[in-house]
Length: 310
Image (tube, rainbow, N blue to C red; front, side, top):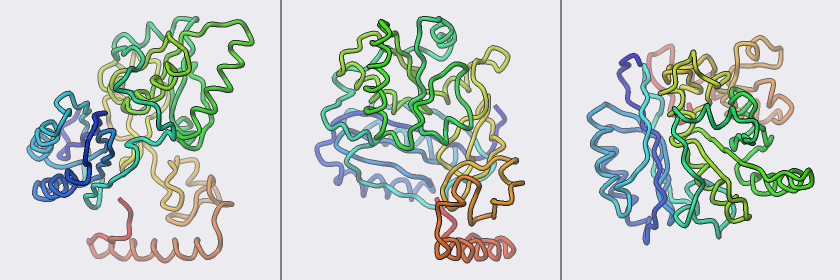
C-alpha cells in the first residue's frame, strides 16, 4: 500500500456501555485535540465508526477507545488517503451502532464462525455454500464477490425480512444451507449471523474483518472480488490494496457515481445523478444547485465550504 499521508481507521466493538452519554464528551474532546475527523457512533451495545488523522493521532485514539469498558478487543482496519476524507468530527448517540431493528439480537451472545480473509476463497468456492452480501443495494452495485446473492435492500433494517423470506424458499427446495455472509468491515455480519442463529440456522460463517480486510490481504491475482468496495467517506470506493477507487459521490442522494453516470444527461454535479433524478423535487434541486455553487466558489478561493458534507 502506498504511504499516503492520511491514516483512516474503520472500527467497531460490540460491548455493553451502561452510559454511552458519559463516554461521548471525553471521546469527542480527545478526537478534536488530536486533530481527528470523522464519525463515531455510541450506543448501549458498543461503538462503531470511521475516523481519519495522522498516524500518531490514530494510534492515540485507538489506545483511548481500547481503554473504554470492554473495548480491549476492538476491531479496526487501517487504510490511507491523499487528503482528509472528512470535514468535521462527530460523536453521536444512537439506539444501535448498526441499525437492524431487532432489539433482541445480541452479537455478544453468539455469532457465526469467523473465516479469515486468506481462507475465504475456499469457503465461498464450495458449491454447498450460500454466499450472501448483507450490504445495501447501491453498495452491491459497485462491487461484490463472485456468485454472491444480492438481497436488493435499501437499508440493513430490511435484511431480517428478506432473510426469513429467502430461507423459506431454500427450505421449500429441501436444502439445509451452509451460509456465508460478508459486509464492508464486519459489523453488519456480526448482527446478521447472530440473527441467523436466532432463527435456528446453525451452519453460519462470516468474513472476519470484512471486505476491507480481504482487499488488504488477498492478492488481486487470487481474488474472487469483482469491482470496487463502497466506503462511507469522501474516497467513495477502494480497490485491492485499499487504494482509492474510481467513483465519486452524488451529494444529493449519497450514492456512488461512476464515470458512465457522469456522461448521462441526467447527471448534474452536486444536484442529481441518474439514480436520484426522479426522486427529488424542483425545490430540492434548486437548494442543491445553490450549495454546489458555494462549493465551487470556495474551491476557487482555495477554501472549504462548510456545507459540503462530512
